[in-house]
Image (cartoon, rainbow, N blue to C red; front, side, top):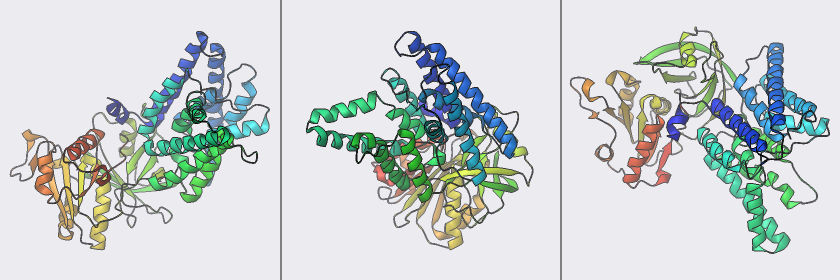
Length: 502
């Protein structure tokens, strides 16, 4: 149920619902005196910061003639509402300062073509420097913790940052535990330090909301691991108390963001549409003019922004895998379903020469080694990253041992057929699977029905030794993983693409 819900909602909309839900819960708990705040103060301060951030966003977007993301602005405002003590009118000026600097940092990033520091962290640092108020991170209370965890799980699953969050938390707790043991010599103090950091601070909220922002965190697992280790060490400085060096959560995050940018710069690119073409039934490929500074690996993805009006509740940003190699003009392919989102509808209508903004280049769904037999399992438009990999193999004329199992509903939904045929002589063997038994072409020599373990055994000679790459809708990915589990394929031999929905 969770996966179906997540695949049909954008990251931004999910985050808004999550943060708004936390504020609503906090208001109700305050009304019943569970939290020591005035429920009216919470609502007033939230309304102020949301309204102020929207106003600042509008003014700055007009000044700099920049595209703005209303949802991103609302998210920033809601986070600030949960971090600065809601006390009207005492909080009125401080929260306005934090909001103005947080939104301003977004436009500084737009001007410089990249994000460096989390906007909320920038706002909180400005708050501390320019006023006599500091962020209290009041969301970190035992009463709100269950709601923070439940919604936070959905957030990290949506942005595909489960491993990074786990690395951060385990590293932080290891540091805190060692510090407590050295300080007191008591194992019980370690348990107490862990429990207090978990239940009485904003650690979990920080981990799932602030720490995971895609624009200011690295794009690959290895670099995310370094980022997690550094952030945890900086976040733990109050527990260590070494030479009086103590970083607040916002300073810890800002410093780690700078490190992230150094090891993995996240630039924003404005790409001009060169052509668009129908490559299969209801499936289009959009090709853009090449930019020399845009460098990527076959199989990676980017976030694409398309401002449009009217806009539905899916928003104006999407993640799409690049279907092109690094040597080609950048491209992505999408499939249209009825009814299409306003984003997809507008995308199909934009003329050649129009521009899209692309950033947050990321992804580990790449070919690091081709020594062992490989199996690609693609469902529908999940063929896009494989197209890039296969085109690279063809261009390099490199012999490989790859079985591609390509699953579609009907034959006219098959994309890149000519390339797949061309790749045969280099060792890429494509096995087509059609799931609509009532509409098979005549003759049909491929598989019929949904993927099964027997199909894999039939086409992959050394199936237990192969490395599997899976890309497609979430349901297909999970079903394929379950089949591989039944075949006793180790998890380390399975790679899945980040496919956050349409």
